[in-house]
Length: 312
Image (cartoon, rainbow, N blue to C red):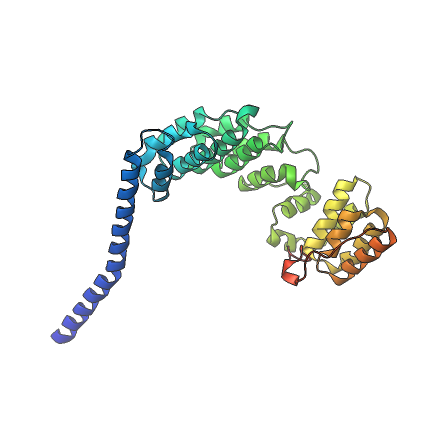
């Protein structure tokens, strides 16, 4: 019995040593890399020249690099933006003040402020909520500053941001992902969704929430077919057509072909041609021939298609 215990003990020791050795070697290699980067950092006197090794040190979560990263914020361009994100990922609460000081929504600093807003969302300090709300723009919702502020507000999780975010969304805007996608995603992250069932259809289409779309299939089909055939504007009709293709509802094929025949253009014909559904491809070719328009099948294999049923 004693021999068995000794054998078991030796086996456990060997296992521990074997499992620890690679980790120890990894730590040694990492420390060697850190030392090399610190040597490179200390060899440079220009603050902006020090940013490259500083950013690489931040990648390995070397927290002592905080002060150098703060000085990199004002180096501008790609370097300054990367420094902002690196500071946030260090999870150092001191980063809040220098980041907030550079949250300038004026047009002169669009790229920098957009990145600063994202960094504040990553940092997770709820003191950023009010300044980020001030960066939202109902007049220019597509601006990257406003969209990045919305994204950050969704991450911060403060429901006081719901009303300011809703103020940007006009009625039935959920189909316009290009302008309003960031706001819808932020609202969903904050636990909000439209009360109106029909608005929820477009809301969850925008979010590509397959589970909710499957759960409400009948309503989704009803709303999209109605809007495809309706007279609420071509943008909404085209959004309905694109979503019906993405959902891959066979019941929608005939209405889609009828829509192409009545209101189609070369862009819609091209979309149908590339959809991966034989009937839509055939209808697109017929429409092109009838209107003397040349369209070319851009994709040759099914996994490259634009997406019949990609949201199923």
